[in-house]
Length: 184
Image (tube, rainbow, N blue to C red):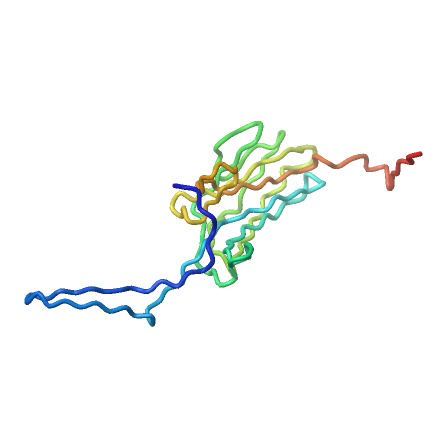
């Protein structure tokens, strides 16, 4: 697929041409039958929990290009994701749960529900105390290529979105309430 900029919403209507058995033909365009076509993509945010005992909510966002910027497609009530891939430094290509330290995190029992107002929330379970780590979560859009985007900057709109859920990696010292460096 060649590099293409997202386009503003387009109105496209059919132009029908018919020829009967007497070789009489005609054509008609019907603006009343116009359909609206938009550029779309899916975005998944990253999330962080300071404690390994807290679950993380990640939001998937179905977006549309309105001619100026990407916005949540709030009229989207039908998009759904049929598969996810989970990867980290311990395991790859997991579909429902993955190891984090000595614990695991998993997707909810049915993460494949339909979007509501262009958004869908996923909750990843907490891996458990002392199990800091991360997982990259990628919705697999093989059956919905129109929601892929050029996330790698290679001029190919074939990349699935990816978000990261991280537990306890940036916690710091719990005994410090406030720390400041003085520069002179």
